[in-house]
Image (tube, rainbow, N blue to C red; front, side, top):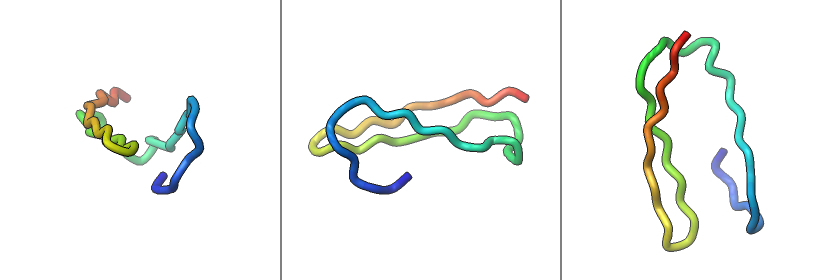
Amino acid sequence: MNEQQNAGQHTVQFDAQQLPSGVYFYSIDAGNFQATRKMLLIE
């Protein structure tokens, strides 16, 4: 997802079936706010 959204709560789903187990990082940018978090994918 790389598009501007209206203010509010949003949910993003993605298909991880083709990804191997491991640690992945995701980033969120909103105005002056920026955060990077890690996600553990276990299959």
